[in-house]
Image (cartoon, rainbow, N blue to C red):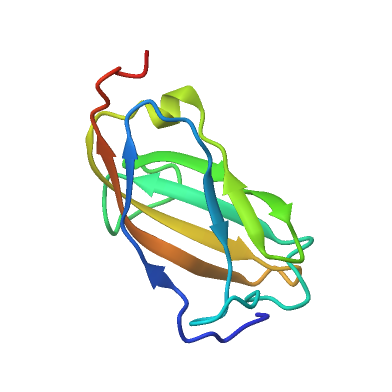
Length: 129
């Protein structure tokens, strides 16, 4: 793996309003700095966001508790920026508490969890209209 940063993985609860499809954008930085986590950049890396109803689901990826998985799009490889665009159905989850994690796979196929925590969906007044 390209880094042994002690700040990884980050436990961070995220809150979204139901129906909001704006992308989830992240930038990988070294702990306590504005320096990219991967100095050589993240070109060729892959990223995955997974949302589940269970904090520690058992079984396979196709488990019934899996709500959705979304591949990330690298928006700036040298600056370690990634976005996860949500579909309408992914943004319109029933309000409540879910759990998520974001994984990174590098060019050597080594996988690492970057972030995890609660994925909280609040009811939107417009109800996604």
